[in-house]
Length: 559
Image (cartoon, rainbow, N blue to C red; front, side, top):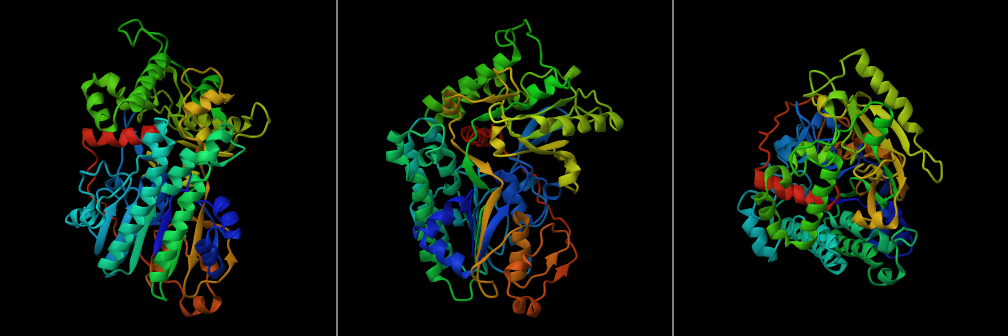
């Protein structure tokens, strides 16, 4: 049984377990092996869970975010599981005759055919979608549970200043997710069950400031009312897990993992496009004189569009958001995908640019980008060298500490047929990657955010690189704290435990250090040649479905 706890971290779990507040976690840590689990760069949901699912790097499985560049223009297209390449863990096991149950793993829509049952996750565009395999399971699940939840509305209520309702949504998601897993495990035969709880991530995003006295937005008055919400989500997970573990047969291995960690949102902002402008590598458009929006500087127009979308989120019922948006002129409704990420760039004189909400930098390359001006070869490498050398020199304006850990050429981190879909340079933050923010309305590349600016972010918790891994089962060393485990190592390790050979094209490794030496010697890992990549047809989203997904991503601060 594999339980994904999205965004969970031992920074929270271990102290509470040591205090006896999370008895099931404490017990499993004593009976099994555990430690931090390094995520992927960048440590966000779409690419992280896809790397777990395949045991491969993003250059092989393609998913580098919830979206990808739509070449040769400067727009983007939203992705779902149909874009993922490489056989999933459950596909490999299904082909081997194993029976599987898969529930709510992000980036699993549309659900694939498996030897068992599947309920898709966060990339599902709505409850009216066909989110189960087989198709009849949808009605069966809804009848068995009364109602089902894929994506809770914690993000929506948090934006509207209703932490009470957001809290209810999170608690309900925990209850529904475990109820669904229990029902399916009791109803269908299984060799592997995988399900993901997302409340552990949502509660960090929206309730960290209530929980953490050192957070810039912490207020004793509201903390008294909501300060226990983060702990309460973990406590409920612990209690639900305890009940499930008691129901398992003795020889069932239990694996807990998260796709990344979480911590406080930094009150620092790095605006990569302003920094690139200072380096002479990017130019912004000058004011244009035609039309209402175009009569303003592009940055001001983009700011107005963002403000309008924020008001829509705050004032309109969720059910009407998409209808209202679709009734507006196309340029105002979405700003086009290029304007959402790259709103005010003068492409004719720009050599490098960033979407800024991620630590990614693209070179405006001739032959690839619509208005590319950088020659492939020497000029391309020279610009990358300049950015790699200079960007890590950015320091915190108050502490003088380094803000950028490292800038990587994409080929230093990734390899595979989809390397070209990944930004030319990938920037790793020294802390939380959520410090990369839009430059709109600002003129300094690095800033300390005011309290009011922090409030406008709507989230007070951010992703961190280290998630968590815990395993208990036959052959696993008890009470062993491990180091060096990576997210892509989990699937090869699961295949090993299930007696299956590890495909040679997986980038992860079997975590041999967690096993008793006698178990390893009696059961050496086996490997197989890579199977053909049977990637499913790339079905994408309809316009209406894409709008729903975009609303959710905006609500979470991802767009």
